[in-house]
Image (cartoon, rainbow, N blue to C red; front, side, top):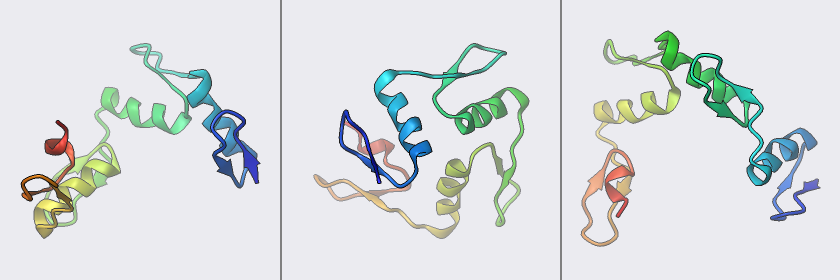
Amino acid sequence: MFSCNVCTKRFVRISHLKIHMRTHTGEKPYCCEQCGSSYAQSGDLTKHMRRHTGEKPFACSDCDRRFNNSGDLSKHRRSHTGHRPYSCPRCNPVFLSGLPLKF
């Protein structure tokens, strides 16, 4: 196991520790050539680039909607299933996403 010397999180792979260390150093070596946004992980830059290209590789199997990231597809799929995993601890209504719960 590899431990972070800043926050003591532990990782099985040293490569994961190196990526994690960027949260402490602020290093973002992956930069978008179109707009200058930078990211700590290459996968995050890949996801970002879809905004520029319009690529939407994640398709809903229940309708014609497509999404540029898997998280948005997962949220959308809840509109078909009715699954509402987020509830308010104060007044108890349930939501498709956690955004309405931020106060």
